[in-house]
Amino acid sequence: MRDRIADDVKAAMKAGDKPRLSTLRLIQSAIKDRDIANRGTGKEAASDDEVVQLLAKMVKQREESAKAFEDGGRPELADKEREEIAVIREFLPRQMDEAQTQAAIRAAIAGTGAAGIKDMGKVMAALREQYAGQMDFGRASGMVKALLQ
Image (tube, one colour):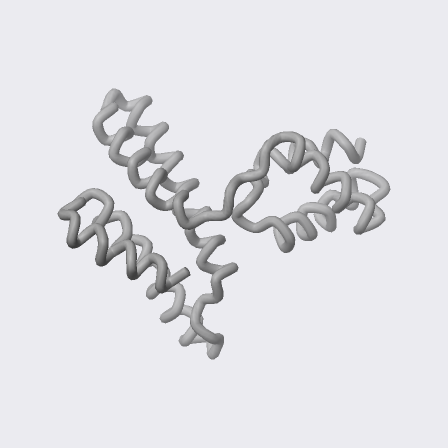
């Protein structure tokens, strides 16, 4: 994934696409920060799974910022945030649709042997482990809760 991002940085530089280049550099910077933090704790450099989680977090932050800018009457800044989201999402796995999410949740419930709402944490942990970056866990949490009640 790092190589793909580096290649895209080079392509954006050659094309003179400054907004895309800026976002790609933000991604590289975030990955480097994670690598440095891992080094401080004696871990290896960030794995692709960690990078996917980091990118998902970046998307969520930008979605929140875009909403805040919209609410604050600054649509031009909200549009900039959405452009960054589009670039970041290119590196994330394709998001699961409603039916796929529902099937994955049912499989996780069966796999963990969850019987009630008190087992929700086990189910969510299994989903996060298996579908990081592919599922909206905020929406999935509500679906898990509904199925376990």
